[in-house]
Amino acid sequence: MDSKRLMVGTIIGGIAYFAVGYLIFQLAAADFYAANRPSGFYREEPILWATVAGSLGIGLLLTLGIMSREGALTIAGGLVTGALYNFLVWFSVDFIHHGGQEAQNLTLAIVDPLLEVIRGGIVGVVIAAILARVPKSAGIQPAR
Amino acid sequence: MDMKRIAIGTIVGAVVIQAAGLVLFDLIVSGFYAANTSDAGRAVFRMPPLRLAFALADLSMAALLTIGVALRNNATIGGGFATGAVIGLLIAVYVSAGFYGNTTIWALPAHVVHPLVVSLQAGIAGAVIAAVLARVPKGAAVRAAE
Image (cartoon, rainbow over all chains, first blue to last red; front, side, top):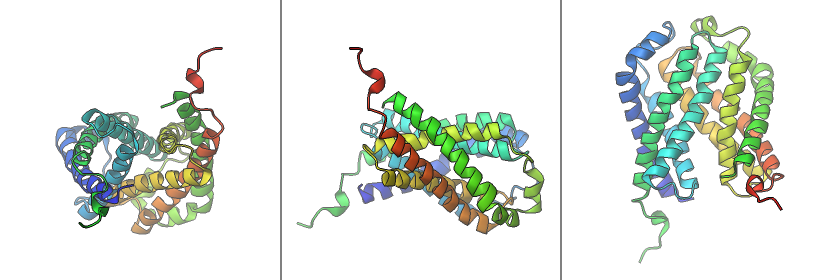
């Protein structure tokens, strides 16, 4: 696997994941989450480095998924792969939390993965568009 | 992608994730998690948990692992373990880091150890999925009747 393309996809994907997440969850759907999330254990000031580090992890996962699928380096391919992977990740995470915590209600467990489809799709498109512009094996070509 | 292989891998993988989760989280490391849970966290955990919700979550995770293993043509048991472990690690790093950044349910050591445990759980599931997929012929569902 091409490590340069993997790194570029991870960084761009991580930034896009963080930015799109801010738009969807902190702005567009903030009222919904405020109404369905309990109080008491959420930090008043989030730890930013941890959130950014996490976004890089999911950026790497989505990049691996897009690079592994033949034909995924198109807008449509990135959209489908990103949306599918992010939905499966968040359906799993949300239902684990719903099953294990009183705090996570069923409405949130159902709606959250659907919103994550949007985020995953957008980020998948961004990663596919960027990777399509990064030449394969560019990082290991011999010097002329 | 062969839907029959995906369906078989998903169901088998979900059973393995559930079983491995019981052994790992409920037996081996349950004391560690309990010691690293805050009072606020203890107040929100269900006793007992909703096993049906866990089963749905495991199906979703197993589908992702099966897609990952199936994309590696002819994955061996070792290859399946590696694929599952990487997918599990990346998901758990993201979730643990995000929850550490936003909540006070667990102390930092739990958030550091959790991705490693999930990686082991997903690796075991990936190995079993690879072993099962190796025994399911490709394209079996779309062959014409003879």
